[in-house]
Image 1 (tube, rainbow, N blue to C red):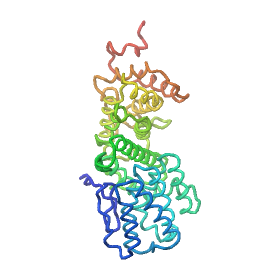
Image 2 (cartoon, helix red, strand yellow):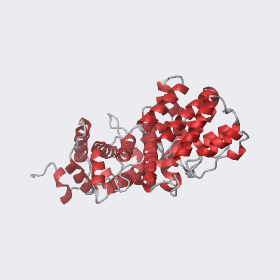
Image 3 (cartoon, rainbow, N blue to C red):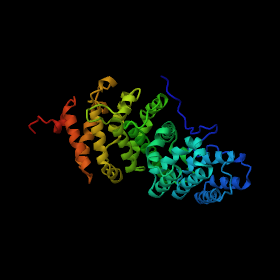
Image 4 (cartoon, rainbow, N blue to C red):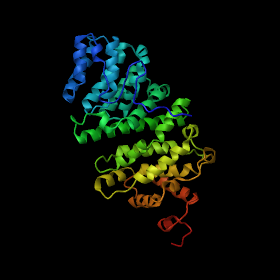
Length: 401
């Protein structure tokens, strides 16, 4: 089966939409001079100007000074919203989701639903932003979906899962730190923070989608399963593990998000069967091999204080991921999925050194879940067909030492 082409296009209504900061915005099509001026201000490089422009647009939408049903206005907003929702400025991001809420209410929630394919993924992504942005996003979603928490938490994810996967693919694989913002106008620190935030949110969105599918909240269509396979087996995705532990871009939330995603994919149920997403993926062995190698390569204890502190903040997630990855190859249906080698073997020569370093770190203040995962891990490793050597004698339970 051929793989879908890599694309950063998030448009489904006949016009381009992208996270790329230089993607086109059809402002020239606007006939309303006041609207054109506001949208031009929103596209300016200066964050204060963007914030003022958005505040003015929100006021105009609220007071009906702008025709939200004008197709040119609608196109401009849908082209800008995904970028504004990930802006470097928290004030801009908050105003963006507030404006999206007001726009949908003024347009009519039922009538606007045809454009949710473009608007919903970045809106859901804002749920994983800083608290004030996340609260504004959730409040707006509830307002537009009849204060129905189940619709916001489950049903919209099910209905728009194809668009959510495409958004995550764009954020995690297609776009880069350099394509999300202009380095001439933002500092290196701002670029790093923005990219980490976008990647973390997209990873958490992906993990939620996998969790809901594992709960059988919806069925994934074949094209989406294929795109999910491409995304989950992409080196770029799991190389973010290294980014999360690098001195210049260390990020505990990103590390925990990636490890959590791995655990969601490869956990097994109480009968030792793989969960629905692993069973449904066309080639889960490919994903397992990629993740195993990348986890062992990147999830290492660093001597530098920053990365070491990030690792320490994630030891619970490391334990859960190690346990899930170890259990997966021993699942009752692993042979049907052509999974033969276990996590530690796939990880290569550094596997056991990584495990030993992890154990030496200790719990680092982690909760009871750390000890539960650690107990499962020891039991699983003891049962796994792993060749013991001088680096691994401490797990040889038959040893006199």
